[in-house]
Image 1 (cartoon, rainbow, N blue to C red):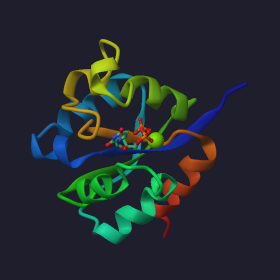
Image 2: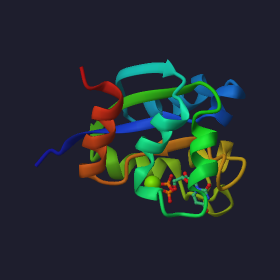
Image 3: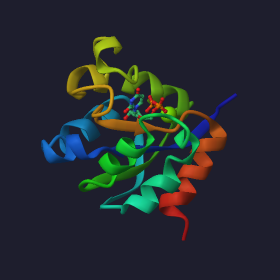
Image 4: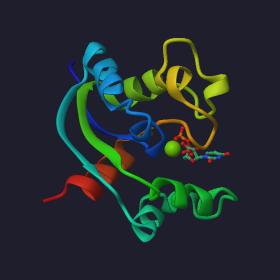
Length: 136
Ligand code: UDP
Ligand code: MG
């Protein structure tokens, strides 16, 4: 049975700043993702805090929210069979040092915090995160 899903991908400030937007999108397309909607925006700190609310108790929360709001990001609604899992696989581990060869974070990630991309981690969070950026 087919299981076409949509997931949220973000090209984070470190990658936009290094002009990696085109190369990262090309990797998604080459791996069978369709970019259904996309926009380049900059969010403010309180929006970043809302987006990353699941992490509010973590020691890195404040820095994470400063970082996500520090410059332009590209948010994309991606679609593919099993898109949520497939995107997590293609992104690689949170820490680029642990990410497998061929993953986006291995190729472009700078550090555990500046790891170039975000991807929803579950169907529930994909729907919440897509609504956050694309709800009309
Ligand atoms: N992060 C960080 N320090 C850590 C763990 C995570 O700065 O020790 C940042 C990193 O940018 C990561 C984000 O917080 O992408 C969200 O963390 P999560 O554990 O959800 O990782 P992800 O789902 O992005 O792989
Ligand atoms: Mg996560």
